[in-house]
Image 1 (cartoon, rainbow, N blue to C red):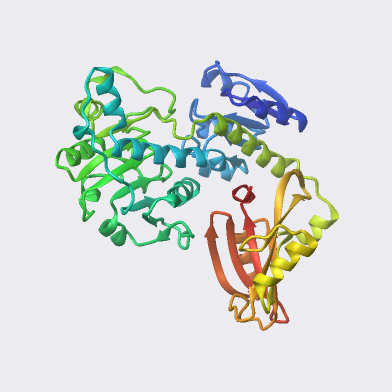
Image 2 (spheres, rainbow, N blue to C red):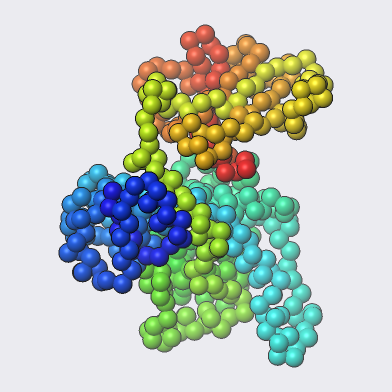
Length: 451
């Protein structure tokens, strides 16, 4: 495959694609018009945000098989048209979700404790202690809008705080052990800190406007590490002036260019709301870098090449043809008269490292030898209802590729589905019965959370 790289990225991306047999072509300077003349020569494109991939571009790219976007969103690509042409769209939200979660937490803590303001005052010879008395996060309710990769990562970072974490998402059943999914009405009623983790789309565009802001029952703090287009700056500034919004942490701004690569233009400097924004000590700003860490640069590249390899260079074998969606065993669970004593026996006699949940055995993915996978071994008390409606003393967990599509396939085959999808930080789960009424747990894992 011949792959065109339009933005610089971690060298891992070039090197690994080369190892897979790809021919890499780097072009970081030519204009879109110039690239259009030769784009038909390429099978793949790797881009960050240099320019938009529109209908004209896609029509010219007659041989294009995939677009790899080294980032989380695909808003600079005509997604529907690309899909209609059979082009694989590959993004990498898994690569920078941890960085975004840490950045969001860092910003709100810095704002709560006046760190920017206090630092500047000390550098100017001012030692103002009472004026910089901080606010604590503990005891507050954090509301998250958009509970995908980024929202879940932020919720995970909040574990160490005594906070209630709520989320609202247009998809059902996305809540997990770190966050309770609620209606917008409950989010409006309880939120003290609101964090946005939505992609750019028709629903999120200018979502945080005056009407939306004043639906919140309490004054609140706002964090936006998603897209600047989600917040109407004029309405934000007015809400801050009226103390409906107590402070804002903005990694993204409404006035950004769609390429995300440049911002400061003369028109921005003349904008009165922008001037008030940058002069307010109730606002903390960063230049769209929530997902930009040393670690995430490599993770983003690795995520893209892993997905390209899986889609285009995946070696089919007999086992895979038989298993289709089933990737292997994910867990073995069984009842015991005394689970604690039994685990101690396995620890003492067989040397198995057990914890309160049992033991995790590390193995390798048969289709990706460099990837670690896990098999969970757990004992349960006799009275557990986790295996119900099965009457058996055991339950097997199977690892699957795509749980959503697999469940649809099982429904068409009249398989009994006990419980639909539940999503946690370590993957998606569903439960079915086999022909002898043995309960089966299906797991689409996120192994990275178990490392």
